[in-house]
Image (cartoon, rainbow, N blue to C red; front, side, top):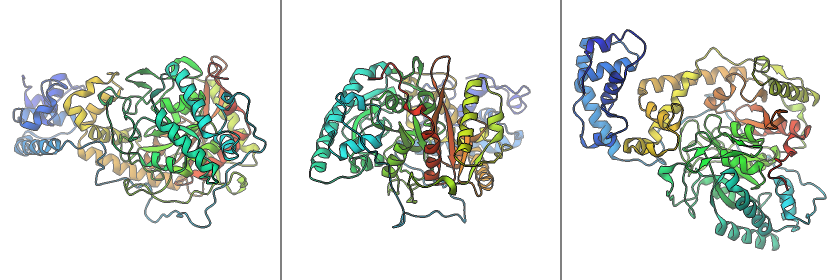
Length: 582
C-alpha cells in the first residue's frame, strides 16, 4: 500500500481523514490496512507486515492526537509488540457469553437499597366477574391479570390459551414478520403441566399457564437462538436464560422466539422488516420489534424485550405497548446476547402496566451467572395511595419545539392527568451541560468487543443492513476507539451519575416525553428505570404515541404505580389494531 508522508499525517490540515490515512490507521491498530473487512482474521497468524511509523502517524491523526515525529518514532517498536498481544487475545476466540472482569454498578458510594424481606409486599389485581367467552380468541387482547384469573379459577385451561395464541401466531406472524421460531412442542408440554398442577391445587401465581414470547436473544435449550442475524441463523445455545428459567418456574408457557433487529438494532432481521400492527407500511421500531408487535397484535400474553439505548421504549411507543426498562441490575442478563455489558437491560413488554409489574416480580433478583444482578425489594400494591410519591416533570422537555404537534399536545394532556390525580409535580431540569452524546462510545466500544469474532472473520458482511448507522458499521468503527477514550467516557459517565443523583434527590418519579431532551440517553447510562405507556393516536394514520415515567434507582414499583394510575385514567391501552382485532 502506498504511504503518506508522515509529516503530512502529523499535520493533517483539513479536519477530514482521507481513505489512505484511515486504512493506515487500521493497520496500526491491527485491523487490516489494505481492505476492510478483507483478511481481518489474518493478523492472528502474523499475516500482516510490521507497523511502520507512517501507520502510527495516521492512527495518531484518526485519534485526534498531536505527537511529535520523535514521539512517533519511539512508539513503533511498542505498537508492533502490542499487535502481537492483540493476536494472542484474538486467538482465544472468546464467545459472546464471556463477561469482562469489570462491571458497571449504578449504585453510587454511600447509597444502599432495601433487600427483600418479610415486609415486602406483592399484591396484584384479581378482577371480579371475568367469564369465559364463547370464542376464546376474544381473550387474545386481555391483560395478564384477567387471563390469570380465568386460569386460576379453571374457567379456561392453559392448554386452551396456548392453542389459541399458537393459532394466532401461525395466522398473523408472517404478516408482521415478527416470529422467528414457534416453540409448539415445548409450549404444549408446559401448558399440560400447568393444567395438571392447577387441577391438583398447586397454583404458582399469576403467570401460571400464561403464554409468552421471548425476544430471540434469550437462549432456550430446546430451540435455536438466532439473535436476528444471518450469521447466527443456525446457532444453538444449550442452556436456558435465567429470565426464561424464572418464567418457567413461575409456570409461564413459552410459545415463540420473536424477532429483533439484527444483533439488537432496529427492526430489520434476516427475514425482513418487522411491521407495526397499526400500519403495515411501517416498521415496528426496535430492537424489541417482535416482542412489541406480537403483544399489541394479541399473539402472546406478554413478552420479554431488552434495552441498551431505547430498544424497549422505542418499539413500545411505535406499537402502543406498555413497557418497562428496569433498573440496571434488577434483572439478570445471563443467557442473553451481550451487546453492552454496562448498559444492557431485560424487561417486560405487555398490554398493561400492572402486567409489567407481575412479570418483573417473576424475573427480578440475583443470579450467580450475572455479577450485576442483585436482590432489591420490589413492593407492589396497586391500591396503595399515590400521596406518598414525590413526582417531578421536566419543563424544557414538554416545551421544546417538535415536528409532531399532536404528540406534544398528548404529552401535555398526560401531565394534566398526573395533576388530576392530586399530584403537584415539581419542575426538574437535567444536567444538560454534559457531553452525553460523546458517552455513546461506551456502547460502541463494548459492542465492538462483544462481536470480536464476527468482525475478525468478516462475517458481519452477512448482516442485511450495511449502512452508516447500521450495526456492522458501528461495530467496525467501535474497534477504532482508543482504550483511553473508552475509559474517559466512563469517567464522564460517573460525573453524570453524580449530577443526576443530585437532581433526583427527594424525587421518586419523573414524568417526561418519551424522547424529550437527553433523558433517554442519560438514564440508559445511569441505569434508572423507565416505564412507557401509550398516550394517544395520531389523527393522520392512527399510530400510537407515548408518555414515559423515569424512576429513581430501584424505584421500579413507584414508577409503575404512577404509570398505572395515569393509564387507568385513559383507555389508550385498550384500543386494538383493526387488522388483528377479533
